[in-house]
Image (tube, rainbow over all chains, first blue to last red; front, top):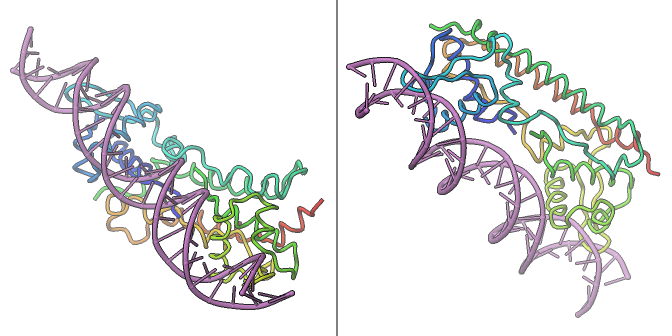
Length: 137
Length: 137
DNA sequence: ATCTAATGATACTATATTTGTATCATTAGT
DNA sequence: ACTAATGATACAAATATAGTATCATTAGAT
């Protein structure tokens, strides 16, 4: 099973590319050429990132996208949130059948712990950290 | 997004119930009544658990299932493995486009770290630990 | 003003995965 | 032989993922 869907993946690539083009407006056409992502699909993805406030857009000729967040404040967790919803292991496994009367469900607690660890780690993976590490050739 | 699918969930409940019925053969009919899981679906799940060696089965009248592992050696991770395949965040995000020439991909490394943490935690959630904590009323 | 190249909004389609059903064969106790 | 169980396998429905298409709107360039 995979935890990261394709749209999240594409979005991340696009965001990194846009972040590198600091202060320059980047059009979909350029991204398609650079990243090889299906055009219409990428458009939909970018439009959603715009709607969610991660990108700023400019219409008309010469238009395109720039980041609407500082690269160090844009994390993989946020991107996943846009396309995959809030990350959680499961509502409550075994509800009713295993822990019907127990308020403090230990299993739930353990799962919550795992979740928050993962969330913290995914939050630490920022666009900024990716730009730095993989400088363009 | 959810990390645990319904079949894993059902399987876990069934395994806990079977584990509680120590050394007694448990038939699908009983599990269906106790857990309220769709009969045919549960059968398919149990058959798979049997094929994968987590359950031992007995055919014919009076037949059913018992555990084929010690409860303390049967983990949520194993059950997830049966129904959802190996847990992994993603193959390699950004491959080719971000880290084309770099052997030691830092992003990959960070993701691997998250994965192995989660795997360890899920491994620690054993059937035995669930039986203990939620003693039957 | 008009042309052109961009995004916004929205609807549609295709594919894959998840979830669930159904049937027939086999087995073993009575 | 009858009955009650699993084994194997195929099918179907529902949902999620992935991708496509179209028309409206906007803004720069001429």
